[in-house]
Image 1 (cartoon, rainbow, N blue to C red):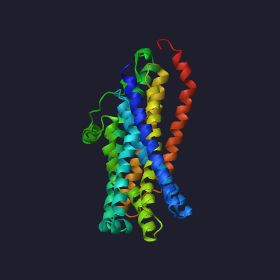
Image 2 (image 1 turned 45 degrees about the horizontal axis):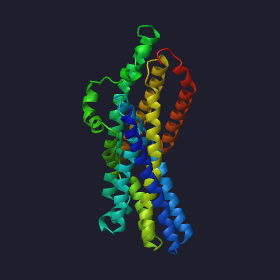
Image 3 (image 1 turned 120 degrees about the horizontal axis):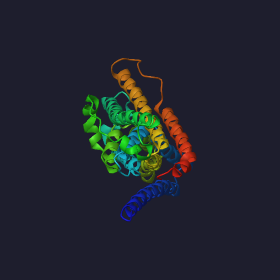
Image 4 (image 1 turned 135 degrees about the vertical axis):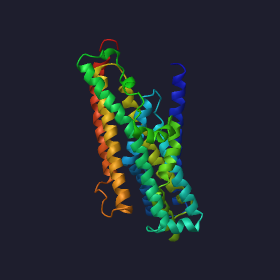
Length: 342
């Protein structure tokens, strides 16, 4: 205990410091732009829009499903997962910051490519981004589906008195490695993330879809064309986007880590709670995969196949479901602590 607490504190301090610095720089630079004489309405509108885009993107269903399902998988191995969302957002934001930097430097190819919705570059990167999110979420969703089935069997045996609930750990019940053909197919993907910091390169892969990078980049190029964006504001926009997304992805990762931490224990109640949590993660994963596949096929193979589901709205539904579960867990948690053996 004396060795793990300092590590946990350093990790939390690092995340808090980075997020705080991003907010200070992101909101401080627009103030410099105002001091330099830029129009206040333009500066504040662009700054607030960039920040809210970061928050909004953190609440997209693919972000939530990826963070929640990887958190579920790593939690079953006993790893601390509090910083998982932070590393994911940092990786995603790296692509945004780099893209805006190239745009601000006037890289002709990139400026032309992002301004044209029908350019091969935009179409290829959009396909890449959607494909990566579908593959990653599907891979970890399959692992968690296996865990869900095992937990359901454990609960059934415990309810029938075939298992001593006081000696059955909900985490151990879900930690057996699946061996089916689908898992073997996606095993290389799940092995890419064996600790929270490995979410950073995964976030980069998600970011290479360039959807959000293009949005922020268009702000910069449009503002530069009208001579309304200074260097300070050009730097501030991607930083504000990063600050918003890092804050909410970090909160999501830490929140889910806490929820899955509550699921460890030997009581039947803990197993049921873990079953509900895992079921929500699996359901979110397969909805995201279904919507993603429909978009890929509808835009590249079968015209009109895309499902009329907006992933951002879906993300809010998933967040609401987990909040309800956490509220229920908080209400019944004192009862868990009074059970024999705890």
